[in-house]
Length: 53
Image 1 (tube, one colour):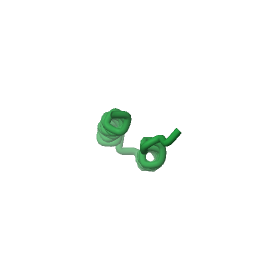
Image 2: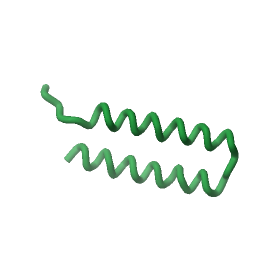
Image 3: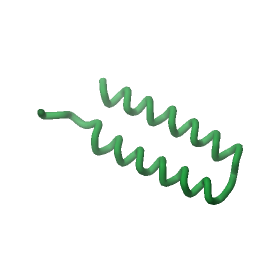
Protein backbone atom coordinates (compact mmCIF):
# COMPACT_ATOMS: atom_id res chain seq x y z
CA UNK A 1 0.00 0.00 0.00
CA UNK A 2 2.85 2.40 0.81
CA UNK A 3 4.40 1.77 -2.59
CA UNK A 4 1.10 2.58 -4.36
CA UNK A 5 0.72 5.84 -2.45
CA UNK A 6 4.35 6.77 -3.13
CA UNK A 7 3.88 6.05 -6.84
CA UNK A 8 0.69 8.15 -6.87
CA UNK A 9 2.52 11.04 -5.20
CA UNK A 10 5.40 10.72 -7.69
CA UNK A 11 3.00 10.83 -10.65
CA UNK A 12 1.20 13.89 -9.26
CA UNK A 13 4.49 15.71 -8.61
CA UNK A 14 5.86 14.81 -12.05
CA UNK A 15 2.64 16.02 -13.64
CA UNK A 16 2.81 19.34 -11.82
CA UNK A 17 6.46 19.81 -12.73
CA UNK A 18 5.68 18.85 -16.33
CA UNK A 19 3.02 21.55 -16.54
CA UNK A 20 5.46 24.05 -15.04
CA UNK A 21 8.14 23.07 -17.55
CA UNK A 22 5.67 23.39 -20.43
CA UNK A 23 4.40 26.81 -19.40
CA UNK A 24 7.81 28.28 -18.43
CA UNK A 25 10.38 26.73 -20.82
CA UNK A 26 13.48 28.32 -19.32
CA UNK A 27 16.62 26.16 -19.75
CA UNK A 28 17.72 26.72 -16.14
CA UNK A 29 14.30 25.78 -14.82
CA UNK A 30 14.26 22.65 -16.97
CA UNK A 31 17.58 21.53 -15.47
CA UNK A 32 16.32 22.08 -11.92
CA UNK A 33 13.06 20.25 -12.67
CA UNK A 34 14.96 17.35 -14.24
CA UNK A 35 17.20 17.03 -11.18
CA UNK A 36 14.15 17.21 -8.92
CA UNK A 37 12.40 14.39 -10.77
CA UNK A 38 15.57 12.28 -10.68
CA UNK A 39 16.01 12.78 -6.93
CA UNK A 40 12.36 11.96 -6.24
CA UNK A 41 12.59 8.84 -8.43
CA UNK A 42 15.74 7.74 -6.57
CA UNK A 43 14.03 8.28 -3.24
CA UNK A 44 10.99 6.33 -4.44
CA UNK A 45 13.14 3.45 -5.61
CA UNK A 46 15.21 3.23 -2.43
CA UNK A 47 12.74 3.96 0.35
CA UNK A 48 9.39 2.54 -0.69
CA UNK A 49 10.42 -1.09 -0.64
CA UNK A 50 9.45 -3.69 1.91
CA UNK A 51 10.53 -2.80 5.41
CA UNK A 52 11.87 -5.77 7.38
CA UNK A 53 11.98 -3.92 10.71
